[in-house]
Image (cartoon, rainbow, N blue to C red):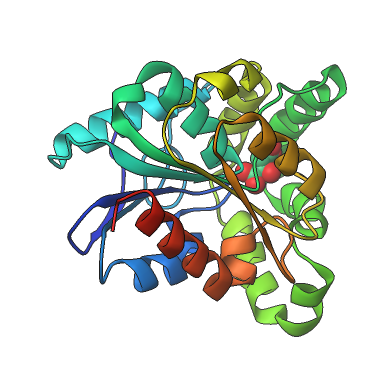
Length: 259
Ligand code: MLT
């Protein structure tokens, strides 16, 4: 199993974990902006981008174990700033559960901490089955309308198109595997009061998947966490308002003593 990774710059490590069903390129603006001062590591999670695809269910804790192995392989043994968007956030919870010594600070971007409802699990299993028979078009159709703010849809059709193409060209096997893995994830809210590292919570003001209210609730329950609401953005805030998200990361890394 090979993980493709972008590893740029030097200094304190910022690990960027992408959402589903995307790849590390969703962080291109942040890689550019932060690699002048930080070592920015942006992997393609198992199955996505140019990383190996594996069959069956890929759980969030398998992805976390992959990351711990990756950090070992590239010689990172100090705790890092772990920044995950949506599915990347689910993986960050598993890093806290199983590899807490790797996490020096935490950025939770447009993500959730609760487990899926029964209805959501059913939806994921249906999508997992369908993508294997019908390919990725139904996934594009199901996901695309939920990802962006009205401002992005109006002003940045080329961005919407790039994301559409990324989803379309993602491996159906990887999509099925991650959907099954996300369906199996368990509640992570019990972790909130155990988090002792500096934490930033970032959410697009129009995120319809992980809403501002839900993300505000997460920020309020993690000791000392700060909330940043990203204007004009939906679920993919780092892509939709890259300057605001890069600035929030820069400020946070400074406050966390990781600049
Ligand atoms: C993501 O952006 O990673 C997805 O919305 C996660 C999910 O399907 O729960």
